[in-house]
Amino acid sequence: MSELSTTPDSSEERGQPPKWRRFDLSADQHDQGLQAAQQALAAGQLVVLPTDTVYGIAADALQPDAVQGLLDAKHRGRDMPPPVLIAEAAMLRALVADVTVEVDALINRFWPGALTLIMKAQPSLRMDLGKTEGTIAVRVPDQAETRELLRQTGPLAVSSANISGRSPATSIDEAIEQLGDSVAVYLDGGTTPGPTASTIIDLAGATNGRIVRAGVLGYAQLATVMPNLADIAAPQAPEPAPSAEPQPEPESSEDLAAGPPSPSEPVPEQTPDA
Image (cartoon, rainbow, N blue to C red; front, side, top):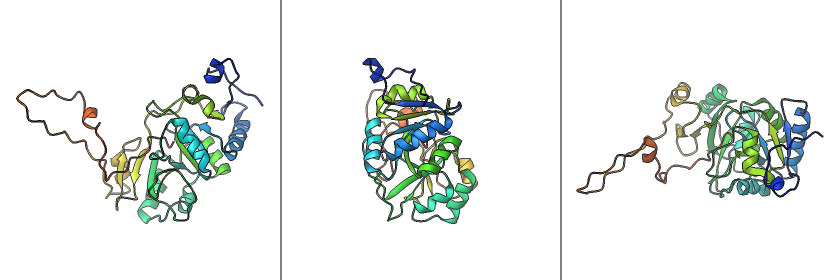
């Protein structure tokens, strides 16, 4: 089996061969790469794969230890559960409690694509993704090789391929540099379209849906299908503290949005959908 391992990682820095394998999906390694990824996932190992936003780190969603390994690789806690990627929109009904007519119209228009939906999970769903509070975030990515793999494996827990606090990888080399030996198989699909991630809509805590993370798809596009959709809340400027001294202006609008989220808002995973 042909393997590429030209990018340094922790093993190579120690003078040892890397534990991971890398496959170029655009070359003659396509079939070998998908087979190796399928085997690794079945064994509870992690795989990095391309999506239509950024690279994602994937684990078998039905193996709790594998999902915990994904969180450990990212240095992330269980309070930030990863989304689940599926191959086809038809699979959504096996994961969530209800698919309304409005949601059906939404996924028919925007899946596969950069749209993640937070919905109430099926009560009988046997997935331990972390502290989900009975919800699940789901997406169908618009990436041919990854959807081909998903048809073989079933639903995968997928988060952005990066260590928490660092930028999501848009190339396989960036993913290897950050994640190294924590991943068994790296699937190289070239540079991804990122760094903008998918748009996330909360359909579990908001009757008509509410955008909780801005992403590739804008409000105007989504509202054409779901007109009662609530947009992401605009950041509010804090009240100035009483003082005789003039208060400095914030450097940018990002400064105003840097505070903690409202307790009523779910904190979505910063992922591609992954």
